[in-house]
Length: 148
Image 1 (cartoon, rainbow, N blue to C red):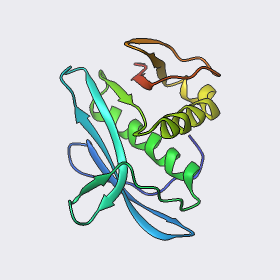
Image 2: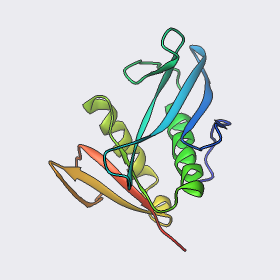
Image 3: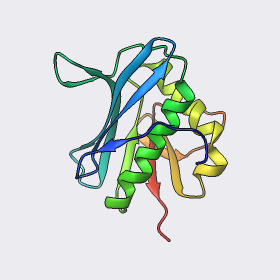
Image 4: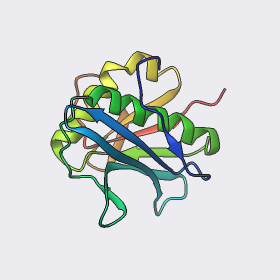
C-alpha cells in the first residue's frame, strides 16, 4: 500500500509492533500484537493505545487524534511484516466494539482492490467465514496471505 503510514518498531519475533500516532491530541503510543489462539494456524490481531500503568495496550481507548486512516494503514503494514515471518497462518481481527469492527470493514472496503492482490479476505457471520463482499456487515475478519 502506498498510502502514508507511521514508522513501526518490531520485536524480534514480529508478533509485537509499536508506533507513535501524531495528531491533534499530541503523540500517542500504539501497540499491535499478533496473539496465538487455540488454533495454531490462527493469530488474533490485537491493537490499541499503550497503557503506562499495565505496560499493555488498551483496545477500548478513544484517541480521536485525527489520523485514523494513517493508523489503519500502519496496522495493515504490520500485517504484511508479520506475514514475512509467518506466511502460512491466518490472521483474525475484530473491533473491541461494533463501531470499531465497522471502521475496520470501511478500511478493508476502501483498500479492497489493493488488498485482494496479496490476501484472501473473509468475513465472519456467526460461526462461519465467507469470502469478503463489499457492503456486507461482518462480526470479524480473517485474512490469509496469498503465496507466490
